[in-house]
Amino acid sequence: MSSAGTLLFVLSVLGCVHITPEAEVEAAVDEATALVAEEATSAMPAGSEAELEAVEPELVEAPAEPAVAEPAVVEPPCTAPGPGCACVDSAEGQDCFESYEATIEPLSDELRAAMTGVSWREGCPVHLDDLRHISLSHWNLEGERVVGELIVAASVAEAMVGIFEAIYAARFPVARMERVGLYGGSDGQSMAANNTSAFNCRVVGGTKTWSQHAYGAAIDINPIHNPWVRGTKVDPPEGAPYVDRSQVQPGMVVEGDAVVAAFDAAGWYWGGRWNSVKDYQHFSENGR
Image (cartoon, rainbow, N blue to C red; front, side, top):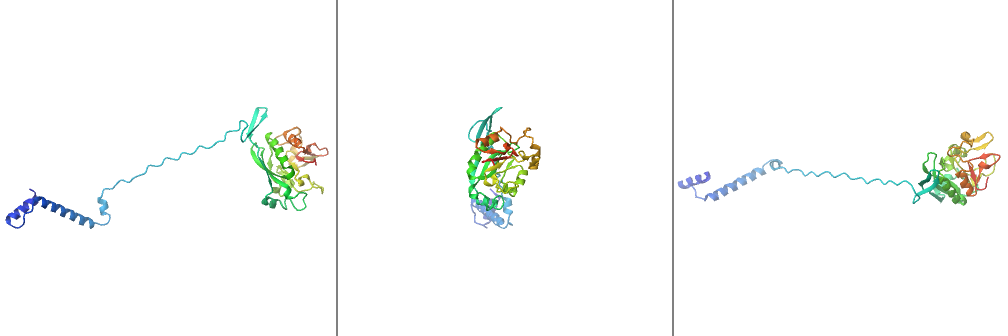
């Protein structure tokens, strides 16, 4: 018998209480204990209950696997003719490289505005509507494939694109190819920069006669490497080291090379064949 039962038995003998079965007494005691515990818990300061509860472990997400970078797409080198690749025969076999690209466009409004008053003005022998803007691939002196631009007469644009395709295939280097307007329309500044250019509304130096450049029907190629020469006068002066044409260096135009051959095939004329002066940089449609 439990202690609670013993106490009730004694009291019943003495006649003090009504006897209740032991199981009912224990159930009542348990219920009272639970009630007291509940009241004690409700009276605890905030947070005390939480401290009594078992702390569940935090769920820590596993770190995500690092993203696998997509392999870089590497264009295969040109080794045979195909899309984007051109090949020509050379002393070592076949020389393959990225294909030549060129576009011919009418002058944009922005380009017209940039040229007006600089490389073109009212009274020039050709109107802006009759000029074309060419962008084309060429090799520079470092052997890099770059894109240059020319302004030429609309009537010679297709021929110019074809000429420079042949020059490109021969890997002839063009130092730079920019509009003369970027040099303030100054022929002297353009030549000093070894810039290849075509249209420029100007007269022949020392005359009142329009240059063929003013018609967009002439081009000067690598002026420093291919200077204008009359006696001891050299223009541009930076071209003096290249007056001796027997010492051929990259960028020089000489008889029998790919540049002269390309212009010959198009029916153009080379100033390097003139008699009184030599204008090694100059090619024109009519020979002037």
